[in-house]
Image (tube, rainbow, N blue to C red):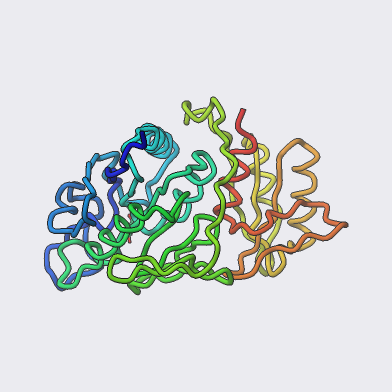
Amino acid sequence: MQVAREEIIVLGTGGTIAGRAASAADNVGYRAGELGVDELLRGVPVPPGVRLHAEEVAQIDSKDMDFAVWATLAGRCAHWLAQEDVAGVVVTHGTDTMEETAFFLHRVLGPGKPVVLTGAMRPATSAAPDGPQNLADAIAVAADPQVRGVCVVFAGAVHGASDVQKVHSYRTDAFSSGDAGPLAYVEEGRLRVLRPWPGPATKGAAPALLRPAAWPRVEILVNHAGAGRAIVDALVKDGVAGLVVAGTGNGTVNHALEAGLLEAQQHGVAVRRASRCAQGRVLPTPNDRLPAAVGLSPVKARIALMLELMP
Ligand code: SIN
């Protein structure tokens, strides 16, 4: 007998969606992560036949997201996704590092069921908060049987975990999938699918995931006019395990920085080249001496490398 999957789990982690300001006119001077996830769900429409269960995982501003919260969040997602009657998981999250958490969950869980992240650009106390609609859309997406894997639902669009990026610091339509475009739109609780849904990532459940204090240290640096190698040398001396360089254009780095990175590589530090461009992807060539992080932004390349280096 098939068990009806009717439960959606909503995991709260804080962010502006749970933010409170002193006045309804204030959309920037608020404290993120103040309201509980139960409060966020009050009055949010739920698709027919769907039951919600809410759980608080963290109450943080997502600029402070760290390995310990990621480890707990991944554990709670895995726990709930394994329950037969659970259709999917929604994660309320600050927008600032949402794309990183989405990509991390995509890579470590590779879920067959939906894991949908959402948040808001306006605090809950705003005269016109965007959180309630985003949350309603996220629940509708998580309940839709066409959906699987990790995605971000924001301002009526559904973005895949690999492509999504926060591209605006203020607008409510703050996320983009760049060249790839969104996977779908959410319209009145229904999904309008635009392109084939990406398959799940290969699940990388390393045993070290349970011990976030032991996760390999990978740092990001940037190529820019006049960039030198001093930061590379300092990081290597400090015992860094991996380096991602946000290169210019097609992931290029200037001579001094390249010399530092090649030497770091010789000393056993893993190096990847991403691009600081907001769109496009680094195209590798056969002569590359520093491997390209193909299709990944610098912050996602950092997560991919960290997972690669995980014991
Ligand atoms: C945060 O990322 O927690 C604060 C900013 C936001 O959610 O928009």
